[in-house]
Amino acid sequence: MPGFFFSHDNMTELNGKEDCKLAKGKVHKKKQKAFGADLKSYLKCMVPHIESGIKTSSSRNVVLSAEEVIQWSQSLEKLLASQSGQGVFREFLKSEFSEENIEFWLACEDYKKTRSDHLHGKAERIYEEFVQSDAVKQINIDYQMREATAKKAQDPTHTSFDEAQKTVYILMERDSYPRFLKSKSYLNLLNQLQTNTSK
Image (cartoon, rainbow, N blue to C red; front, side):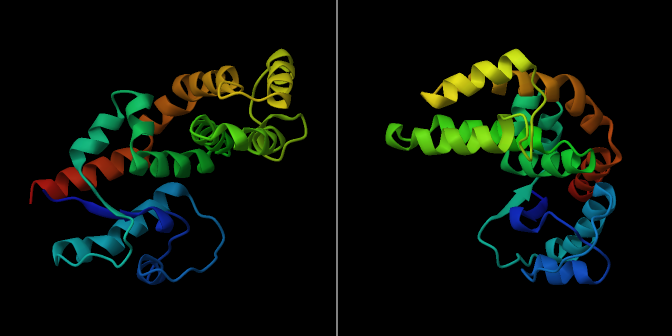
C-alpha cells in the first residue's frame, strides 16, 4: 500500500533544498519554523523517494498510510498508540509551546515499565523535569496535585505519577487534540496521503 516513509529522527526543522540532506541523516540547525511548513517541506522531499521506490537508509523508517492517519482522529489514545502519531503530535505541540505535555505523558509510560530497583532515579528525574514548581518543562497541574505527586515521588511506586499523567492526558484530549485535528498540518498530511493512495 502506498504511504510515506517517516524517520522519527528527521521530523524537525526542514527547509528547501536542504530538506533532502536532513532526510539522508545530515543534521543542521536553523531557526524553528512553523510546523506546517516543516512537514510540508519534509513531505515534498520524501515524495520522490516514495514514487521511485527508494527507501532512506534509516532503520527506524515507518510507512505511514492514510488509514493510520485517519485512525488518529478517532481518539487521542489511538494517536498516542502510534509512534508516527506521537511524533507528528509532538511537533504540533511544539508549535503551540506545550510539548511538555506529551513529553511528560511519554516519560510516565516509560516509568511504568521501569524495574523496581530503578524507580527512584527515574521518579526523581521526572519530578525535577516536569512536576516541581520551577521545572524547566513544568506541566499544568494544580498545587494540591503537585504536592501529592511530590510526596509519591519521594517513595516511588509504579503508580506514583498516574494522577498527574491522567490530568495531563485529559488536558491534551480536551484542548490540544481537537486543535490538532483541525490544524492545517494534520489535514494537509491526511490529504497528501489520500492523494498518494489514489494514484
